[in-house]
Length: 140
Image (cartoon, rainbow, N blue to C red; front, side, top):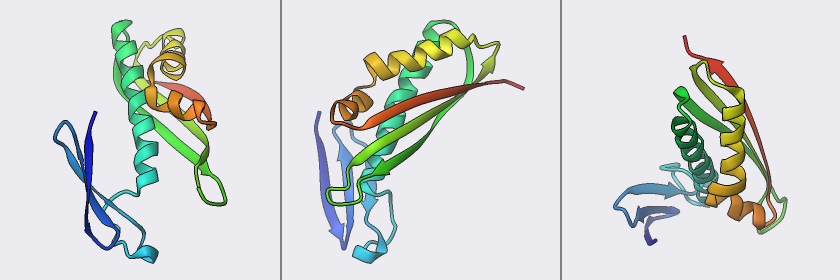
């Protein structure tokens, strides 16, 4: 895997993935940023959420669950002093579908947490306390 991050101005950078996608990353105004894009640590948190959400939806589809929507809401705590690493991440999945079996949703979240989500497992091994919860909503 490769990526490139190039400085554009002040605290702004363009991050390019090896697969050819790009996005602007920017710092807060107090360090010269203009709020043009997410902060680097926000990207880490979003990446963890995306990694796990991909797992959960794929696992549920493979188990023939009628999933109509899925998202994960994330909250993270950071250390008070430098380096301000994540100390805890709480992940709450909302899965919407028709007649979803709770045991399948629970298992999909567990498999992502314990076996498949490289990002959350990596952070957990680095000392971040990661918790997972879920709720099931019936499609209209």
